[in-house]
Length: 188
Image (cartoon, rainbow, N blue to C red; front, top):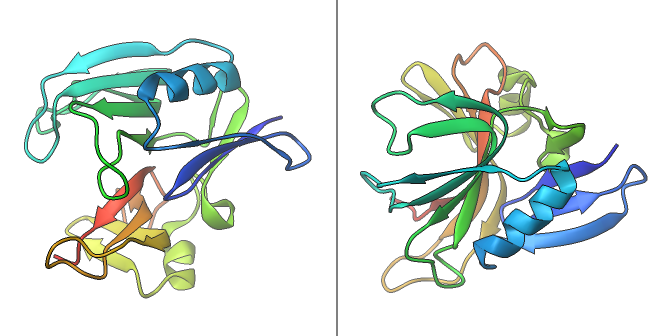
């Protein structure tokens, strides 16, 4: 079985022994990530263009695994087990990535997907929050936990900027239901 390790800076494909086979970052052209992920998952994605919305530019979702329609509040019309989001225009390093991922399943086509400390969708949110108390935050009816923080250089008057992996539990007492990376925190 192969694994995808999702961090705030990269996506690593690893073999069963843990050896890194390939690494992609969020600043590479989306086509390179789509090709690498298609090889890892053993299939091409479904691609869906979206018009964008509040804080989300227009772009394309590349979806592997099950495809689910999103609610009317979402700027992207389709969701799935593993989504690579390619926004337009592309970003500039090191603060604005070209792409980001949204993971809603612990595996796609036999490829296990996790983040730092082996965290995967379905893991207990309360246990993870206990390991990361400084970055665990209730948000209304859901629970957010930020892991794998990576500092970024200051930008204009903003300092203490980071990218992280954003874990989301729809129910604070339930499992992690999705995670996204990279998740920017501009200290706001």
